[in-house]
Image (spheres, rainbow, N blue to C red):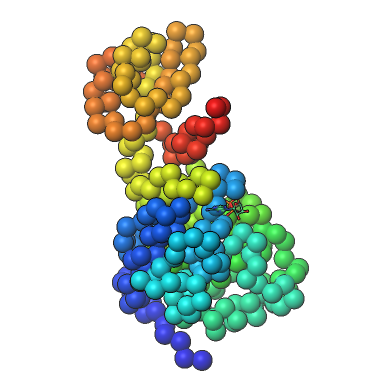
Length: 300
Ligand SMILES: Nc1ncnc2c1ncn2[C@@H]1O[C@H](COP(=O)(O)OP(=O)(O)OP(=O)(O)O)[C@@H](O)[C@H]1O
């Protein structure tokens, strides 16, 4: 079968312009992403927030109840030209027929995927210690996830989506997967979307963060800007209160006379305020920002 092949080590593969309008109306009618070519995007949301539903609609596997998902201006549902550019690996790892061997699963994917890389597939099999001759049904849960992730990376699709693809993988396997993901992204920059609950493990990979909650967009930001929007200030209570006056306080913790406050928003002068009050200032991990932004209504 004749397949267009990627030129090895070509840092600018000649993919079609990716997905300008892809996310435009994907989530509650709000814009999810501006046109961008090479991004590594983290999709974060609490259980049941709609991540899998959204990603299935983006991959054309599910017709949206409302709104549209567009790829380069064309609807993605029932559009083979669009879906051939997209590879979605779901947590169920359901792209693999369990009665077949690992080797057959790879051959099948190679025939289906226009940008398939045998080299990436081989590297991943080695990394994950997967035997081509083994039946998929004989693999453990984590090994099935590893195989599904191999198929997802080797597909080299211009839009590659992993929806909690790490399920069942042990920590060394997950880290091997993250390393492979990052190396592959550097080698072939494209649009990769990763949905995960293990935020701290992968936060370093993200160039962009999208947070959804109850089917609505909460935030879309580049990771660096988002990191700059959260800070913690620690010191004597009065001094912390003065320094944080007028800022959006996400949480306050007191330990004796010491107060620790997490603030979020436009923090242009917060460093100056902290220095003026002689406070300790720290950055807020993305996971903490996520927890605060998606649990604000819980106590009401
Ligand atoms: N935009 C939406 N409007 C209404 N219902 C939705 C929306 N998105 C998802 N749902 C419904 O919410 C339920 C959970 O959605 P989904 O499985 O996509 O969540 P999730 O974020 O992937 O959850 P988890 O992290 O637990 O896997 C499903 O029944 C789905 O049909």
